[in-house]
Length: 390
View (cartoon, rainbow, N blue to C red):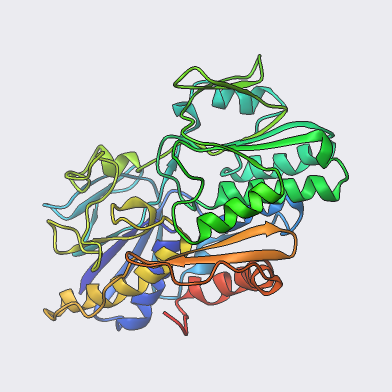
């Protein structure tokens, strides 16, 4: 019987493991998920929790998410040897596999920006909201905030959910209006790029919204360091922006056991991402290795919606490889980003490798779908391998 090792119990890993378990008989393969954490967070909640739009309880035990027949190994991966087909573990013996799915996600590194970790830990103004604890703390800080500069910055690395900084910025501006302090707050977001959102026609619609609401965007701002004593962020060009309340996006990278202790990322431009065929999700050198989600180098937006689509591709293509058949599924680059523009309004940005798909229209229904419906669908359907619209 074959062993399928799935590295990571995040969105892509858990969905893929459960889909594989549903598709394969128990005597065909054992499915083993490895993760150093026993807790799985609904990460799209991190920009909603600070405003009270979702309750703080947005995590589940990994054991509760995985279907019966999926084995969970609570351990840290320290390396992968695809030639020997083994996964090195921190506490346990090496895990031997026949097929491997890498879904290790992004590594958040607040030490990569000088001053960021110190500013978060030692002041009351800085909250890197991609961390669950900081999202909770930001909510508390917003309650006491009565004016000044509210700043959101993005790092000089790829990030998961690229729309999240924009959503937090717009929801914060809306929150200040509702609190009656908008005239006392300057709202600024920076990005080390020419535009705040990469895909048309959503970009122009967002510019229209931001101009109407006097939300400022600083383009081509490369965050160099944070000076918590002075309360400023400095760019590589020497520009400074002062802040009174600051929500930076933490720099993000590939997971070190994969980037440093395996050959799976060799050939990627920066050595951070597992190299795969962008359509089949199969590794470009090792036919028995697949990868999906934030950890691989396919040119798609790193969102849960993308991982969901890729999970179905991997769950169909891997069994085909097991049985010597052509791979039946291709990933078209689909990604989606619900862009919450204010309380009760959102537009849905959908796009693939070639085109934008949905119209840039704000509606209350989009808000309801993202805030009230999607969390239940995520936990009760997608994560458990049930998906009527794969």
